[in-house]
Image (cartoon, rainbow, N blue to C red; front, side):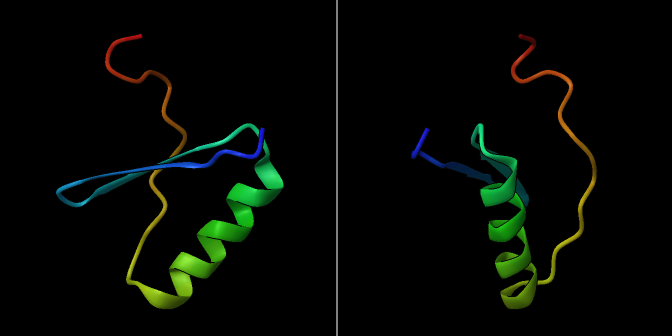
Length: 48
């Protein structure tokens, strides 16, 4: 999949993509620009 979905809600950021290498690269670039911390993987999204 070539699509990356970035969801921002108030102070929470959700990145969705099937390619873990791209997600890791994107997170690294975001860490360089913004003060962020990694919480964990989301076990569920909207109760699904």
